[in-house]
Image (cartoon, rainbow, N blue to C red; front, top):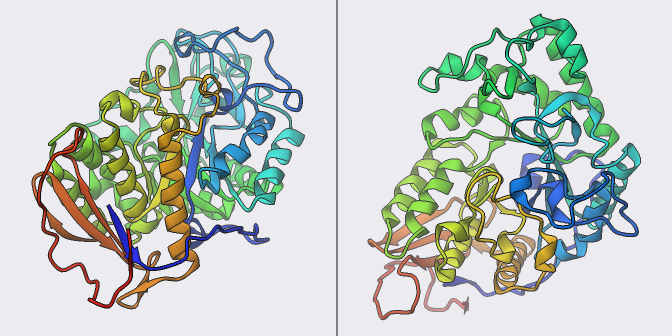
Length: 469
């Protein structure tokens, strides 16, 4: 249940500003994550860049299925119909383009030259066309960036100049990389300096203390964001690079940066804001709390309350965090629980709690077969982009957010964006929290409906308040 001070539910049309989008600009947005290869198929106006394409897109085959930057344009109406006003697209840089022990780089994360576009997804003019189409609709464009690592086909050849050149790596001098070691996650230095991947597909750790590397990356990202009018960056593997690298990189980019800091350690993750390394991170701590609270009927509601309070007290700007229930590395939510009511209550928490709500493509279609990678990277088009109940509910939540933001609806002198969420009451299975003019009352009792009583105490609404439910 949602309660809010009475207001008009209105649509918004935002004009793309000539200045770079700031963190404050982003906090009122609704973000949608796209794997370019899997979101929309080739069409008459979006020709395939890979041939031949499979007749069906089997995620277990781990190969290209045909989506491009132009094909994303075909489905922008679909996204706006759900109230989405910003998109995050998978990495656009050139990848290693050969068969590997883990098949092909359809996902875009095996970047071997960050400075060059990936021809599998289009041309410079195609990416410019997508940027223009997005901004003409008042939407924002976020691009996934990979700078931590470069793939190689063998450990023995990884630090050979000739092998790096043969693999079309942008970096070809061994000094451009940290010495080979595999990550020990119990050691913070190892996490930052050792290599991801494995001996089948090593991901060589780029030496971001090398002045030439730093200068090259900063110059490239400054030109890239300007050339394509990029509004934000999602930084892959952000915790695997020393934090003091990021202010210079994001400063050169001149746009909002949110980093992937995989894990539940709030003390570690909050450093990205307290140390001013970057604007934001993906909300992994809150994600784990929502799984624990809403992942099964009668689950652990205290996890959401306890971790939610820690997030609010540990991050200087929790409103900049990107809150999600799914992504390309995690199981589909409906693989965790098939209960539609639990799924919806978790989505409400995701949209009303402090932060930027983030939908992973297919979440609105209730994709549930996908466990972790690669199962959770299905093509979206077999869904026919249906107007599902979940699609409608996400649209409703976005409409509520936009209305309270547009009308600057106040509660106790604070509007929705400027206020912090406050937990009002909770039980083993229920929770009530307030953010600005909105009161959210949620349960994890699940389906079917059952008779239960939960007192929320002082809601803050006066006896004269007009309430919309």
